[in-house]
Every structure is written in structure tokens, then in C-alpha cells.
Image (cartoon, rainbow, N blue to C red; front, side):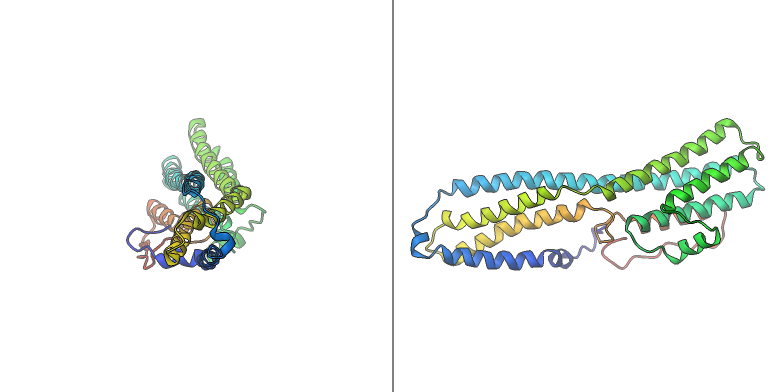
Length: 293
């Protein structure tokens, strides 16, 4: 997630540099083509490129809006994960007797690992040493590791409910929190696996290049440099807006504009360890970068 205080413009320029170069070549080529005798006879009313530019603007506005909604939904889901993780730990500490330190520790450690494992699986990264060590120690193997960890939550709750004299209402509350965590996991997986329609990008790109192709024929041929600059700048702005929406539409791609799942997992870990009564819990390190992961 980009931080307001240190936003790097070079990251964005690197993302669209190939399109900038191609559009520069395209603008120069179209501008020179417009100087040829046969093409000099072609003159379009400026209203025609303006109308097409308006259509492109409306499509870009819709694309950007939908991409931001996906990004914001991912952030909202992870905000719920933070809250539910704290609530789960608070209820475990409240419901189980004070002497059951092992059970409290088991739930705490498993929930911490779950948050890291979920973020890493969404980004399709290899599990970190912390997660892999826990999985090896507890012999957890499954196609969906975060789901297996939630199953372990439910299994331990079932095993300890009767022996620890939890009431039906207390069991229901704990199960409800685990269910909400599962629901949040499913929402993240839906966002990860549901791609934005490729046909929409193809349509937008086609319209932008058609706009760039006809724009010089609506401008004054007497000022070639101005004509080329305008033919370059306006489509590049359209392409930059489109690239912004493309970056935002995938919130779990391990990039600077991602939902900061690692940072949120670290926050959850600190909160849970403090709630569990652990001593010397390390503080969250200051981030020197212009984004959080």
C-alpha cells in the first residue's frame, strides 16, 4: 500500500514506460503522415476526436471506479480480519479458565500463523520460515493451508469444549468468530481469482489508439511540433489512468499498491501476543520505504 508521505513517481513511470515509448513513436509517425499530400487533404472537425475522447473518458471512469472498489473491498476484508483476530483471542482468554495457558497459547500461535499464511497464499509466495516451521511441527498438510488452520481452531474448540465446561453460548460465540474468519478468507480468494474482463482492456486500448490516430487530422497542420506533442500527451494521460486502474484491480499481487497483508499480519501478531500476556513483544519496525507490504 502506497504511503502518502513518500510516494515514488518513478514506480509508476516504470510501469508505463513501454507504452510511453510506443505512443511517442506513434504520435511522431501519425504527425508526419498527416504532412503527406494525400493526407493533408483530410480534415476532420475537432468535434469528432472530442466525441471519441469523451467516450474513452467515460469508459476509463467506470474502469477506475470498479478497480478501486476491488482494492477497497480487499482492505475492508483485512480490516475485519484484524478485528476478528483480536475478538477471537479476547473470547478465548475470557472463556477458558485462567490456568489453561496451553490452550490460550495454542489459539494465539495458530491465529498468528493463519494471518501470515493467508497473505502469503494470496500472493502465491512460498511460506515464510515462521509459517513453514509451524506447519512442520504440527504436521499440517493440505491444499489450502489457511483453511486447514481454521479447521484446527474448530477441532481444538470441539475437543476442549466439554472438558473445560464451556457453555453452549460460549461455544457458539467462538464458532461464530471462526466462521467470520472463514468468510473473510473466502472473500479474499474470490478477489484473487476473479479477474477483470480482458475484453474491456482491449476495447479501451483500441479506442485510445483510434483517438490518437484521428486527433492530428483535427488539428492545425501548420504547427507540426504542437500537433505531435498534443497527439502524444492526451493519449498518454488516458493510458496512465488505465494503468492505474489495472494496478489497483489486483490487490494481492505483491506490489507497492497491494493491500498491506504482511504489515497487518505483524500488527495482529503484536496485538495477540500482548493479549496473551507474553513479555518482551517486539515493536513494529519503522518502514523506510514509500509503501507497506
